Image 1 (cartoon, rainbow, N blue to C red):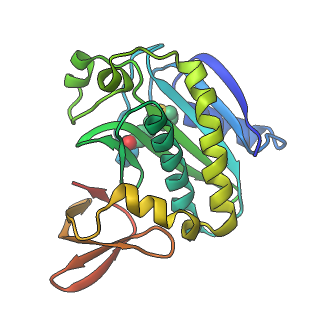
Image 2: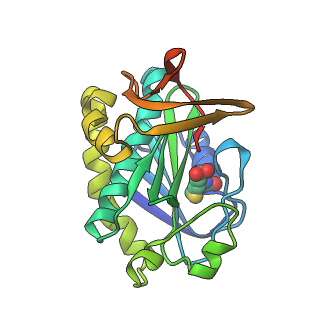
Length: 238
Ligand code: BTN
């Protein structure tokens, strides 16, 4: 898989720009990456904002052209989370995964991913990785957060970090192309487990508690509840 990175000084949201470019340039190749040194209106999952200081953290969107079935799409995003997790491990950060696609250190979020399908022919995978966020900046966020700086004590140049992520993205996206979630299951379960751990999943006003029974054929969460195994397609683990 080949990548082409386009850096912008300032964008509202790399996901929005990637989407616009995809819709206006019919020949925009799969593997195009739109990255921003500053993002002024970053978007998170569930209509949340993604706040990030300029020039400090990694914000980019990767375009994948795919006509895969809708059910196969969530696991493509999970492949990207595995790639970020591998990169962090290579830097000595002891990160793990939280379904559906967060990367955490302990209970603190270090990376969030927002994927957006475009017209059943493309997927924009938007990645926000906290790189040089300070302890003070992390404390100002309304949820527990961490960064590479907080975990390693070292600042990291954001542009070379994105280049270092590419082989990991290529590895996991190629794995996904072979057998979709089946190719990711073992690594994903290892990083998001252990099986049997207590979990509560919230989807809007709906809240379900149980223990982790595993992941279904497409990466959906299997929750062992008093009523039996429930299949969860979307939501937030809390
Ligand atoms: C989440 O809620 O955890 C997902 C956050 C995703 C943030 C990234 S930053 C780059 C890309 N552009 C956006 O507007 N959002 C994503």
